Length: 125
Image 1 (cartoon, rainbow, N blue to C red):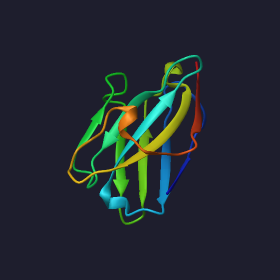
Image 2 (cartoon, helix red, strand yellow):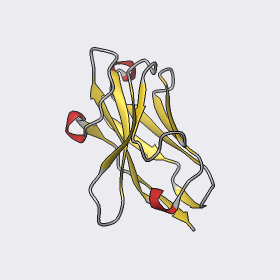
Image 3 (cartoon, rainbow, N blue to C red):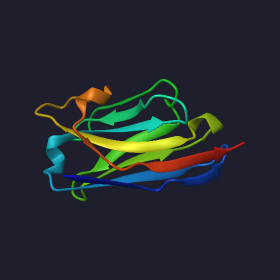
């Protein structure tokens, strides 16, 4: 199983970025997916999660109304659309996947067995 995150970069506060995570080596539609982030000096935290079909999503309070998680099972890809970015959103963003038999979302780091390599998002003030 491989998860390849991309789309990070430098953006000004108030701007937008779209992260992508391409999955291979798995039946993607059987996996719940999530995005996490880790800022310098801080622990990794959940950003957003999506069920295997994409019908259910959940977000950290800090990004609700600004970020949107989605997926395209035909392309084995999960996305994170980030709008109204703030300097405190600066972090390395990781995608993660976990096999799921139900349409559930996983919001805890230890529920995920597969991780991508991370992509850096830097938001300047």
